[in-house]
View 1 (cartoon, rainbow, N blue to C red):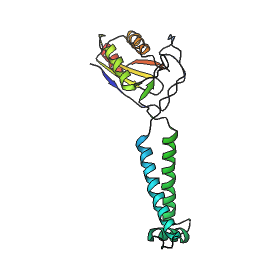
View 2: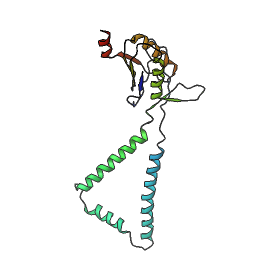
View 3: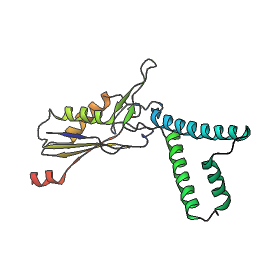
View 4: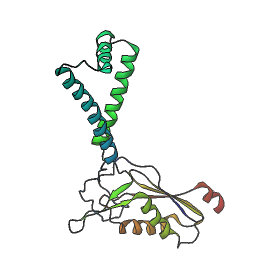
Length: 204
């Protein structure tokens, strides 16, 4: 009957507000969960280790009287002879800039956009997935009559619910607001319940 939707993944949660205009829930200052970025960090560390190890080995070989590796001599020659307006130099610089920007974004962005922090209890923090909130709201609405279809979208600033059917949107909003208040989010998200146009045609 009802289908929850994960909806768009937000970049940041609202700083305050309640689940509705008459909500008495106060936002709690809780830091957003941060992704570990283990895979990306391991890949970057491995690449840096390989390149640095190869350069160090070649430098030590040259210092001990052995000739430089061909690849390092070719790279040094290319860097010394190619001009800055060369196509390959521009392409390489652009690729390095994009890669550096991507790595910086991964370093500073919290990540874990699918998860919302809950209010801490006894010094213990927890999170809940946005899709899980959608399932909770859909289960609460499943016991109501007059709902032909329910679309739930957990947006970055509010929960949007689209109702299709003769059910009363105000009554549905009260039920869903009570269920949303039980989740005890650290930063509660406002709830917006709307009726689809197909409901108005059916009622007419």
